[in-house]
Length: 267
Ligand SMILES: C[S@@+](CC[C@H](N)C(=O)[O-])C[C@H]1O[C@@H](n2cnc3c(N)ncnc32)[C@H](O)[C@@H]1O
Picture 1 (cartoon, protein in one colour):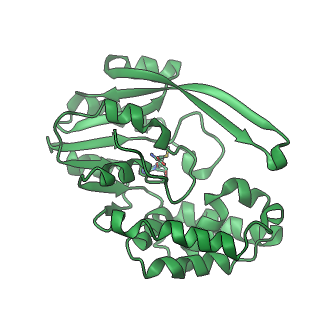
Picture 2: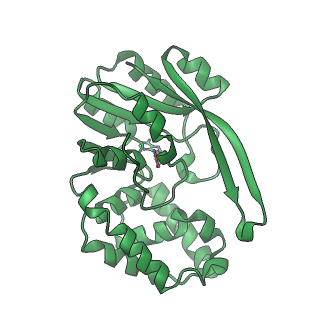
């Protein structure tokens, strides 16, 4: 397995550490990878780095817009400047958070300003919950390092195909393509904390229908629960432990938990 790239942004549900399981259970034959619920892009980046043709999709247009900016090294400094111009204060967070939430839920085509506000509010959620605590950390050096890190991505993502479609549209596009490898990492059913995580139970019915009928290769990564076991038991190939830990400001508290994730495939 090649070493997974760090993602340009932290993201709840990032699968970078689980790529070891994903790569072990990938199909033997495919000519394109479709990252249907792309999020941070950890899966897309891994397969791009492996030399594959990759289609990244996420219904949140702001995050797709971010990947489109990353394709062009001239636009990366513009984005950094836009984020840097947002005052790192609690008041600004209170003002911007509802607007950024609207960007997520209304899902209009975002401009640079909306993408920068979305990134500022959500992408370092931990930091942005306490902007005043982090204001001294977000200095010129911080932004210079961010620019340096993000400027590594344009050569990697330049050929990435991006869309912001509902997963059902992607299913229609690829269901009969025997060479397509669709990776499905939908929002967890048990997540309640952030807007993108809201997921209707229909998604699992649609995925089961695809597992039973589609000609493309499908891999679902899902939390192992009584419900998911019952629903997908005929297709489960592997189950592994996933540790979560959250450290509070100044290391005052640490929350650790362990869950199980399953790899489910139709091949
Ligand atoms: C668990 S996260 C994916 C994490 C990603 N694999 C990673 O490594 O960061 C689920 C993603 O699905 C997206 N999503 C939610 N509903 C969707 C839908 N109906 N169609 C497409 N994407 C959707 C969310 O915006 C979110 O980014």
